[in-house]
Each structure stands twice: as structure tokens, then as C-alpha cells.
Length: 230
Image (tube, rainbow, N blue to C red):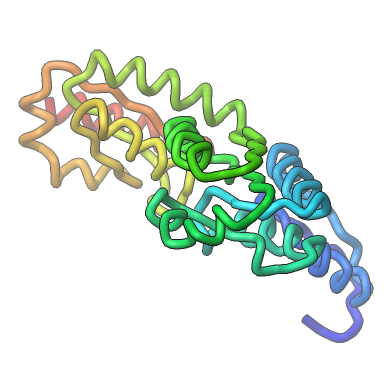
């Protein structure tokens, strides 16, 4: 980034930290903030918990840009940056169990694409070892709805096909969730179906779902390919 900017800088839907916003403005760029409303909500909830001296636990993938921004904002307003922790599973929380037990107040927020099942598991675990536990359910409503509809479809399918980027958090979580219900394959493109011809031919009923950002054209190509194989 040059020392002095003249133009527009777009903030993507995953959001950024306050420090990044300040740096962009200092460099002279106009900011177009496209941070998702639900992502902004998580950031605000995490900051509120940090300001109220909670040990903040963020449920999500540490290296995901959305989580990095949530973590950076919470750390900025926490008296101790070490009291902001990212956990992608229960095992990560178990590793800091003594720190959790010694903390007066524990606050929890979630990456918007996490599952309710993970949230419930975390609540069950933390409620047994925390003095005070405050949980903010910050899962995106549309993500929850998509997961619920896909679960219903999976319950009546021999095989589920999830279409979308393998780098997409909401798509990978969807595939993991459905795989607990029935056999599930996660693909990005119709050509990948060639690797699963036997599974497709053996299935009596096949359900297809997709990540939030998967184009309809890609989904239709996958459906047409499935019909040709079967």
C-alpha cells in the first residue's frame, strides 16, 4: 500500500479490525465497508464482552479472515489480549481448562458459519467448569436455515452432494454436519463427480445442497451431471 492513497478501498464481507480501518483512512483512501451485518454483530458482541472484562472465547477457525478480525477487535478492547481465545473444537478448550476455571467470567461468540451442534457441545462443556458463562449466539440466521433444510433432505437421502468451495467455512461445515446423517461428498465442480460414480449409481435417492456463495449455474451443472451418471 503506498504512503498516500487516492481512491477507494473495499472491505470485504468478512470484515476487518478497527486498526485496519484507521490505517486505510490515514493513507488517504475512501472506505467502502461491505462487512456483512451478521459479522459486524459478532465483532460488536466480542468487543462488549472484552470491555466488560470477560475472558472471550471465539468459536471458529483461527486463520479465517472473519475470525481474525473478530479476535483483533476484541483484543484491542481487552485489558489483557491473552484473555481472547479462538477454539475450533472442544479439545482446544480442554487445553486451557485451568485458565477457564480460574477466570471469573467467560463470554462466548461464534463465527457466523458455525453449527448449533458445536455451540451446544461447548455450552455443555463450559457450563460445568465456569463460574459465570455468557453465550452470544451469533450464528448467521441464513446459515442456520440452510443447515436445517439440508439436514431434513439428508434424512431422506442415501447420498448428499454438497457443492461449493472447499475453502468456504459455511460449505465445509455444512458437509461435516450432513456427513453425520448420511454419506456425503463435497465437491467444487461437476467433474469431481467422476470420482464417485459407483456411490452415485448405488444410491436410490440423492440430495444436492450448496454453500451460500455457490452460483446457481454450478449447482445446475452438478445436477445435470448426476442425472447423466445415474
